[in-house]
Length: 324
Image 1 (spheres, rainbow, N blue to C red):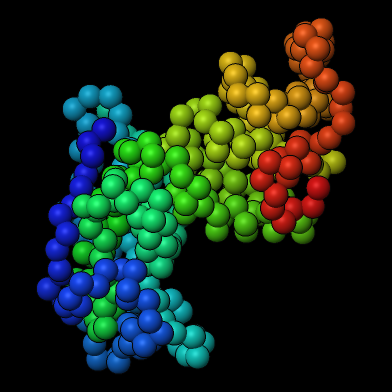
Image 2 (image 1 turned 180 degrees about the horizontal axis):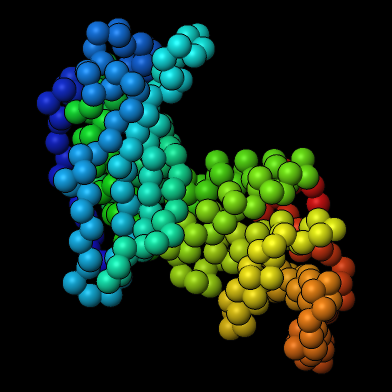
């Protein structure tokens, strides 16, 4: 995968702060000035609060070989919309699309929305942890004026794309908690809140999108992928009547765990097997392959007693707000 590194430069509309990088531009005065833009500054393209990348630059181009991970920001919008809650300072929300493209374009891209501050927090966190790897990585500074201009939004979008490609292509950066937090924290927190409120139908689509996103960036049996997959299975099976997609996700989870050697994930695997056995029983399907697996593990000296639910096991590894 190509390691995309952009040379550090100053955009035409950005004021020059000699010797100051993103770390030094966090004062309340600059923050206020960047957000408090008079209406006449906004250009005509953003009169409706929407920015879209010109269609001529979004034509699909398949990779020369194999697959390629793509980060695209094709859309951004200003929040809150005109006429809504004038007391809240306006800001730009970028819609990030993540695809794993091959000979054909990814038919199931994952989409999340992030603000400039989200990208900036990731940049600063990685820069603190891995200064050598981040030494030449360009990141757009805050600006005093023109925060909502099409030109600025377009340039920032391109910079964010290159930044994420660079992070994803370096294992030291990709495997950090900061990057994982950037990728899933907002959506996962919202999904867990829905689960806590017993609103599973609202939580499951969010968790499915989280899984698709992480599954494109990490290996199939990477810890973040298996953890979100187990959380998805638990969400689908925690109601008296399982979700219609419960079996599909349960089968995928079982296949992913078959060759996992990470002993730290064993506390998830056993509750997963019990959850699947119960689901198979509810569906009137043969549980024997699952019970045989539990018996085999028990003979190896592994405690397979059903002592914790899958959600409880997940909560021990990654505590969230959902009820356990």
